[in-house]
Length: 266
Image (cartoon, rainbow, N blue to C red; front, top):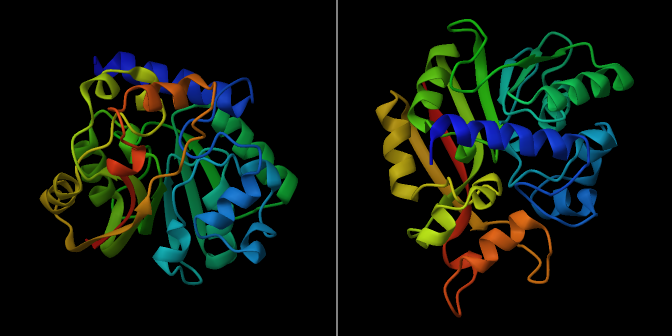
């Protein structure tokens, strides 16, 4: 797939999700966003601290818990969406800390900024930009988090190069993502809807680890948390159907895709 066309399609798809026009993207196609968030590691207490409108059920883990955030830290969220993890991180770093979310989808950034106003969040900022070309300064952040987004990038090594650039020396990454146990069937690899669904663009676990290390990170650790978010076998959503219809006979998505946590230090 052409990288620019892929990026354009992903941006348009998530713009529609932000406007609740269609689809589910990464995560679940079901209506219970709160229940889904709890199923992947968020507590009820955490969910009470953030605006309901920020939870679009587009996650595959809880990177804010993985990061063990401290008061006063500066945090960057890659692909921040409607602000879900940013608002949660903001409660952990406090008013002396700072959280910046970057997203390439104008509709998502607008939604996140509206959520910040409604919630009165003062230590959160949202920027429109690409995670391959982060609109932030060098050596600025203590922590970079991301949640089920890097798989959507057509240039993942560049993403980690940018992450390394913006982290302070000694800074850390805490990333939740989707990776593969084995290569996907070609029908899924070549389907743009499967790409939007966080599956088609995913890479093998060992390749993911090598990529992070090649960017300069030390103490790299990848933890397999379990199967990727499930898809209703009867779904009519085009994203879910593209993935399910591309599987071989008698196989499930769990045979290929898993949710992972990625850690490392600059």
